[in-house]
Image (cartoon, rainbow, N blue to C red; front, side):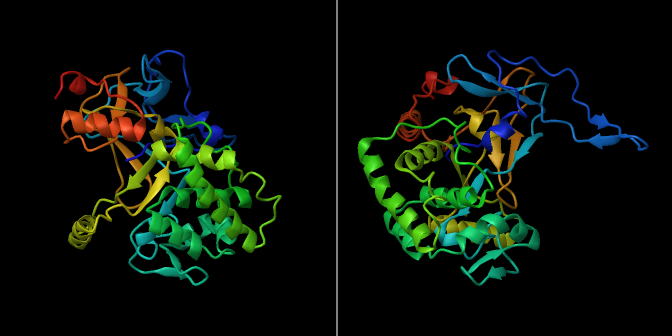
Length: 329
């Protein structure tokens, strides 16, 4: 399910990273602010979480107060997202919401669910729609690749000035083999040539080096989430069932900042859901005590012990030592 998120170092300042397990925040109430000649303005309370360091798993997310089962802990918007190639014409090109009344962009035959989504994507989409992505998409399709689509979107955001080239640096990277890096050279060449054919200058593409490309993919590979939207109606459920049969349940993939800091547990106390669009919702699966680490499950928790261990090691590079795995369940 790939792992959760980030939004550049500017976003990290919202969550204090400590060298020890964080102390609970004393008050969960709303903050207020007052301006001259006005009534106090009520602001939403911050999420009841804090980032700290765990004993064995590096960074982690901890509860700053008691959290009840079923409580919405926080939501998260992606740093970067992209529809799957099979969903390009059935979901919003920006928020991945399933389309009902299409608001199509003739330039690339993609659609937005609203003028708001069109406007939010306007700057980077101006860069993206200059290029002919058919060869790049065809290569990704024939090779079964999905993460280069996220890199494509991120590169367009960087070229347009929406974000910086180091936007994903805060995330933990995986180790890439020499053979994997060699295969990525083809993807990088296609990406650069597609931009070059659209008259994107070498100066604008200066960041787009082999080191940058492999570094970004090393982070995306273990931090990206498959976006599978929950059905809102009977028709949605039927469509989802048909998609599952065709192995096309995911409408896209996304990278987040804070959700990427959640560690794994085969018996998690938190889960992540997507209801209408790419905005992630983190919810408590059971009662959680103040100071307790919040953990999600990266894989299908119904698998047996050996299958879970194999998938986690091959996909995420670690052997799980959660209580369930230690008891061989």
